[in-house]
Image (cartoon, rainbow, N blue to C red; front, side):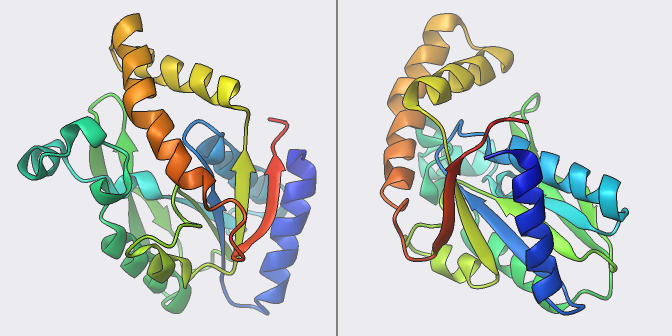
Length: 215
C-alpha cells in the first residue's frame, strides 16, 4: 500500500474519535519498516492538517537499558519480548488515551548510544492521533494485550524475509558491528524475534495487513 492510502485511513480513524484522541498501532517483524512508516504518516498528516494532527510514540524507548539486560542475562537477546518494559509502555499509552490535556514526554532509543533515552518526543495536548509502533503489539505474550487495550486500530506491516534481513544487517553495520558480526546478530537474534511476531499476523486484533510501498 502507498503512504497516501494509509494516511487517508489514519485520518478516518481520527474522525471516529469525535473530537478526542485516537491511537493507531503498527505491528510487524523487525526490519519491516514500521518506524519509517510511522514517521512518514505523522509527517504527512501534520503537513496536510497542521502540527496537532499526529504524533509519534515508538515502543523502542522502552528497551531495557544495557545495565538491566546484563543484570537479567538478556544482553544477547536484546529486542526480544522480555527485554522491553511493556508495563511502562502500556501505562504511557493509557495516559495518552485518557489524559489529553497536558504534555506527555516520550522516550526513544538512540542507536548511536545503543540505549533508551528519556523525553526525546512530546505529545502536545491538541494532538488528535498518536501513531505508535512495535514488533509485538499483536502478540498475546504477557503484558502486550494490556498495551493493546489503548490502541483503537492495529495494522500489521509486512516485508519479505530477504528485504528485512538486508535492512537489519545494514542497521547493525551502522551501529558499529563488522559484517560478520552483523550477519550473526541478525541470524541469532533478529530473525528468531521475527518468528515470534509472524505468529501474530493473523490475530483477530489486526485490522489491516499490508506491504508498504515505501512512498
